Structures are given as C-alpha cells and as structure tokens.
Image 1 (cartoon, rainbow, N blue to C red):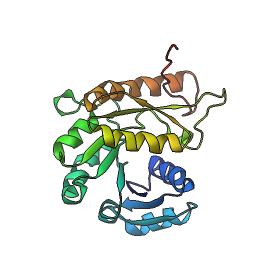
Image 2 (cartoon, rainbow, N blue to C red):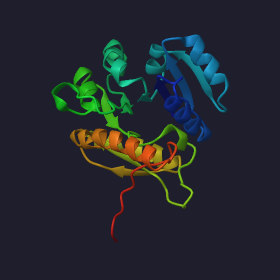
Image 3 (tube, one colour):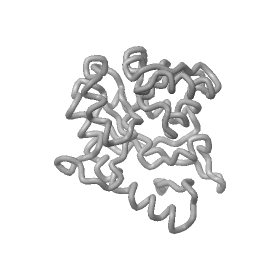
Image 4 (cartoon, rainbow, N blue to C red):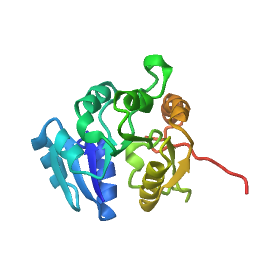
Length: 207
C-alpha cells in the first residue's frame, strides 16, 4: 500500500512511517518543507521518501493526518480536491482545547472535507510506543478506532493489526469526542506515575 503522512517529520509521523515501512508499505512523508521531509525520510529504513504535503496526498492510497491540531483544518481544506474518496486517518489531538461545537477533532476535519473517508485512530498512542506494540508486561497495546465508513475502518484496523497492535472498534466518529477527552487524563496519569510516555488505555473484555 502507498501511505502518505501529512506532517511526517514529527515524532508520530516518523514513528508510524518506520512501522509501516517495516511491513513493506511505500511511504511518502509530506511536509511544508519538502527538503526537510527528504532529510527525515533518508533516516528511515525501507521505501520511504519525502515530499510536499500535496505530494503525499496525491500519490497515496491512504493518508495519515499528523500535523498539529491547530494547523490541521487549514491543511485539509487546502488539500480538499485530492482528498476526495481517500481514507484519512486522523491522529490529531486538541489536548483539552474546546473544539468548535464541542465536537471531536476528527469531526471538525470531516466537516471541512466531507468527501474524504475519515477514521480516527492512535489518539491515545504515545510516539515512544510505536515500535513497542507489546508492553513490558506482555500486554498488547490497544489502538482505539472510530469511523462512520465501516470499510475504511476495516482497512485501518487491518493496517494497525499488521504492526502488532490491537485495534479496538469504538464505533462512530462521534465517539471520538470521548477519546479526545481521554488524552489529557492520560497525560496527567503518565506524569503522575512516571510512565515516560509509555502508558495507554486498554479495553478489558470479559469472555
């Protein structure tokens, strides 16, 4: 699969690029600075290249939105024409900020570009754990996934599972409102218990 990462020079973008490249996917890191993206890409093993935001959006089967939340809406509006019918994995976090209409970050972006196929994921995943799908206690880390497009959601969940993480279907995009609010608490607990960006939420189901 060809995967583009918008904001691919950041910590989450780099970590996801490395994880996907190890599974044989072709990665394009998109950045406002194509030169910087090329430099970062050269340090990641596998089929990874750098380019502009447009390059990453235009040439990919699936996109990851990894720019800061404050810049994300403008970014996707600028790329609206090339995002149509494309699966976009929104990993952005408002980190406790009140979004317009008190909706989830992914809903803000889905409202801006409704022609894309939006999936929220990796909201509660720290960048330091992207190469550690199983924690030190032997527990597979969960990745919470919200979407309205079930086929797009399955594609993303299969991708997540292929990297060793356990995807959890959390239902509709509206449910991402709850996931967004879990992040500030996660950060507080991580600091309180000195987890050093290695904590996460896991769903425990009784069987």
